[in-house]
Length: 133
Image 1 (cartoon, rainbow, N blue to C red):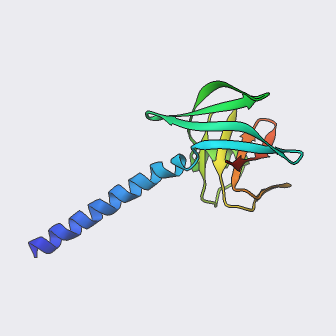
Image 2 (image 1 turned 120 degrees about the vertical axis):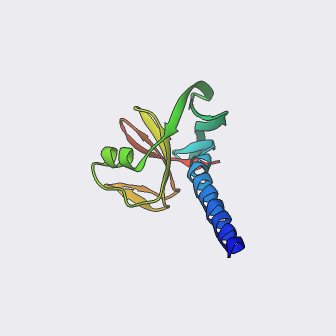
Image 3 (image 1 turned 135 degrees about the horizontal axis):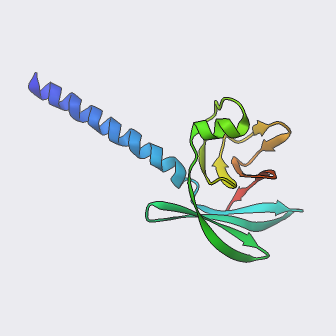
């Protein structure tokens, strides 16, 4: 009986570790370089990197990568405040007060905006569909 109890405890501990690792994994999915479709031409636009424990976002302006900024995981509550309503989708997000990048389900819609690729950059002027390279 004791060995069964130990085995169950070990199993649940393993499940907890896997669950917690999954929480961090969703932001790792955002690491990479993204382009925008500029009149049929794909242009590099933003890059997400993980350096140590931090995530960094770098924008591309006129073909040159600019300064990087630290971005942090976006919670469901934060996204709910931005969208002014409940969030019922699974997503991964990194951002700050001015800009955020999200992985959302392909085909996700917000008002007239539809994200066919599953990657969107949210800015103060509105959403922008991204293409992961």
